[in-house]
Each structure stands twice: as C-alpha cells, then as structure tokens.
Amino acid sequence: MTIEQVREQFPYIESGKKYFNHASIGPLSKSVSDELNNYIIARSRDSINNYNDFTEFSRSAKKKLGKILNCGEDRIAWVDNVSNALNVVANGLDFLAGDRIILFEDEFPSNIYPFLNLERKGVKIDFVKIRDGRILLEDIAQMVTAKTKLLSISAVQFLSGFRADLESIGKLCKENNLVFCVDAIQAAGVVEIDVQKFSIDFLAGGAQKWLMSLQGSSYFYMSPGLQNRIKQMNVGWTSVNDAWNLTNYDLNLKEDTSRYENGTLNAIGITALNRSLDLFLDYGLSNVYRNISQNTKYMRELFKSAGVQLYPDNIEEKEMSGIVTCRVNDAERIFNELNSREIICSLRQGMLRFSPHFYNTSNEIEIVADQLSDII
Image 1 (tube, rainbow, N blue to C red):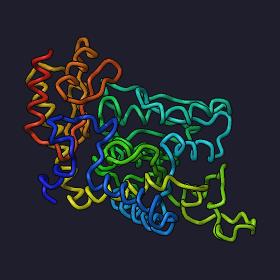
Image 2: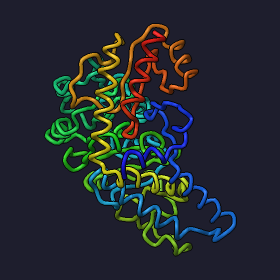
Image 3: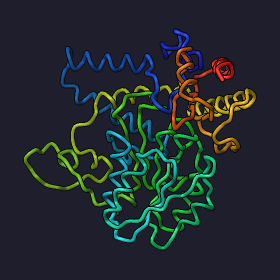
C-alpha cells in the first residue's frame, strides 16, 4: 500500500480534521467499518451462527499479532483489557510476604494496581523514580534485591512518550531471575517489539489505540517458562482440551495460552482487530515504524522552534516513540481552542499530548505547530 491509499481509509481526513490522539483512541478505517458491517449482517440476517468464521478470524489475528511481537500464535490469548491481563500474572504467581516488585513512577494505573493489590499479602512495591520523563537503567538496577521477584514496565510511557530500553531491562531481569512484564499498549504497532530478543515473560496490549480497532479487545503474550510457574486462578469451559464434550467435566487445561480464554470472547472486537492489522502488514511494519519516528522527530523540532517546552525536553532518538508531550501554561484553554480548530490531542496531567501515526503527513504536523504557536 502507498501512504495515499492508507489515508483514503480514514473518512475523517476529508473533513479537514487533524487527528493526533492515537495514544488515546484510534480512528476506525473503512476496511474495519466494512468488516463490522459484514459481521452485523451475518449475525442479523445471514448465517447468524457465525462461530466458525469467528474462529478463523481469531486465529488469523493471533498470527498477525505474532508478526508484530515475534511469537507464535499459540502464545497469545484474548482478554478484555490490559488490567485483567496483568492480573493473570499478579494473582497467578506464588508471591510471599516480603517479596518485592519493581514498578515505575508516573505509569498508567493499569500497570500499577494489579501489583499494588498484592500488598495485602505482604508484598513490597519499589517505585523507580522518573528523571524528567526518562527512565535510566542504573536506577532500575539499584532497586533489585534478593527478594525482588518481578518487574513491570510500560514499553512506552503514556505521559512522556519515553521508550524504555526493553532489551537491556530484559537482560537485567534474566540475570537476576526476575519475571519481566511489559505493558505494550502504547508501543505495539508503533516501535519494534520482540518478546524473544527482549527476554519478555509477559506482555499485554490493547486494540483501541494505535492498532485502531475497538475497545474491550486486548491480548497478552505469555512465555512457556512463565506459564509453567503460573497457578491459573480462573478457568472456564473453553479453558480445557475437550471443551465441546460438554458434560465430561475433565479439568485438563490446554497447553497453550488459550487456556486463559475462559469462555465467550469479544467476537466482534477480535474480528475488527484482525482487519485493522492488515493495514500495518500491507504497508509494512518497518515502514510504519519509520514514518512514526520521522513524524515524532519532526513534530518535536517544530514545537521546539515555536518555543514550546517539551516533556521530556532532551531525549535521544532511540528513546522516542509516537508521543510528543508539551508543558504549556493554561493547558486546558489551549486544548479547548485546538479542538475548536479541529486539531485533536489529549489533555493529560496538565500537559498537552500529541500522538502522530504513520499515515499523518508533514503538512498536517506543520499546521498543528503553526496553530499551537498562534494560540500560545
């Protein structure tokens, strides 16, 4: 696909809207809308019981996610949201009083509360400090103790857009026998994610942001080694090998991660995601990552030239993702004024957060920079 063909997939562009809010929720493409319409027609008029079609969509979507994460489809499970995915690990590992978990300041709470909840068992939480939006490996290493059991981090920080050095962190975890958990909702489809290369034990992500699909459709990856250590706290009729032998109550769990899919799944959400992922693969993942990187750098350059203070202010290219956050006075007023000019971003913690995707153009970025400069 060419970038022009990709842009034709998004009807909102025709209205003149400048959308830079993919870190919050992504727009649906025409292909996804068409797929949803086909699904609704099938369920309301045609086959109605389209279970076999959905099963194929689910398998296809897992294969496509596997290309993004570098894993087999048998290592991916569907779940409703990232919080519940992380709870699989938090509640499944055998934590004891005095065990320690490493988390990070300024994280999105989905990656905090499932582990903070373990304090009721006497588990201790150690928070790594953030240095002007950046996370340093040496600060993480200083937190590791003989009692540390797990480290959980967002691959990309939701507020600053800082991209963690997952390969180095994964190596640190492996050397210290720590379970390495990653929240990839702001990273998958944005920057390279390689669960093998980065020694990731568990990774969770969602469909509604950068992957431009529906809410309530999330997924997780679990390594075979971690699965062997997890005590599965919740099971259902589809968790077992012989699921369709309905009255044979043999609690013989499946060998792959589909054992955590305990019952009816979000069929329409998974169907939509399967179609949305085609956009990334047809354009080419390397091209997607390149465009997002170029758009992020260009936006930062123009904002700096306009006198806008960035957060973090100084950041290396390898630490960038698809998020550009600005510190401005009277952020809410500026946010509302941008919205009135059909420039869409996010208001987060008193700052403005912009998130350009791979199909956004340099011209759109220039318009946003000019309008922001005018308002400020």
